[in-house]
Image (cartoon, rainbow, N blue to C red):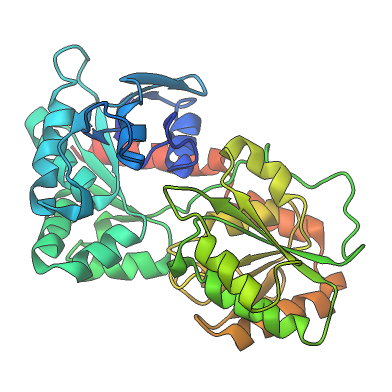
Amino acid sequence: MKVLLTSRLYPSSAYPARGTFVHNQARFLSALCEVEVLAPLPYFPRIPGFGRWSTLAGVADVEEWDGLTVQYPRYFSPPRRLLFARAWRAYLRALEGRAASLSRPDVLHAHLAYPDGRAAVEYGARLGIPVVISVHGHDVREIPQANPRWRALVAAALTRADAVVVSSRDVRERVLELGVAPQRIWDIPQGVDCARFALPAVRRSGEGGWRLLYAGRFDAKKGLAVLLDALHLLCQHRDDVSLKMVGASADSGTGEAFRQQAERLGLIDCVEFCPAIPWSEMPAVMAEPDVFVLPSFYDSFGIVLIEAMACGVPVVATRCGGPEELVDAEVGRLAEVGDAASLAAAIEDVLEHYASFEPHILRRRAEAFDYRQVAECTFALYESVLKKR
């Protein structure tokens, strides 16, 4: 079986940490079928001095990632979502550009509903092949809410797809609201590579103080200001808690506003701000802390939570969509969205009952989401849509 996987959310030499979960799905699927990866990038001339756009322009047309050949065709996509309703047509031309030299795939799998998925259903119809679309939260939440026309484009993509993959009940409900028939929805979670994210040989929890970790985008929507406020509350009655924040970058936020907040709150000595690092280095980072904290305003799943659990680290997250399905009293605590007092109480509750969190139980919970199992479920989906055709 030959699968064409396409997504603009894919790692590249410019941004190696972007869309690593899409790449990992492709990586493990390649053991079960032939995978071709097309990751269109917005077109920009090779002119220095334009930040992210100049960086993207420097990406080669083809790169190798873990043995997978990834093509990066360009498509017209202005910044700030200008002409966004036409973006799928430009993306479609990028897909059509691969037809001349490459064989016809059996299945087309797009990650993100728009513009990726909308272009994919059109391309799939022209080739006469089934189309699968994996949605990842913001594409069925933020885009449809932002503009009625964009909502119609997302709905057109999903209702024409042979199957839509969702990772949580929250995402499933949003897909149903967009008109997708229940029998076309497949519940397949995000994954974790349990061979890389593993229990450390030794962890001396709380030794020298309790270490909290956040890893992800330095984006206000991730609740980082709330996390710093929660740490401030904790530090008013204890002096044994520190926080490491990993993920600062020019693309996803430098963290300067959060650094200034830490200074105002008198936390600068107990908060460490770290730049984004390659995904390959994340297993070591995830194995270091005593508690992992994800204070998001919205998350459709929460891959970092299961990565932490795979390392035997208890977690604290917010009731923001996906984490409710991953976090219970056996693996951590849940807090209310945007509520610093609730977040501080959840963190303190984990610290006060730390002995009740068994690393091997945390590990077993994560193993249910191993990418190898995710790949097998996805391959079964491909077989199903091919059979129906």
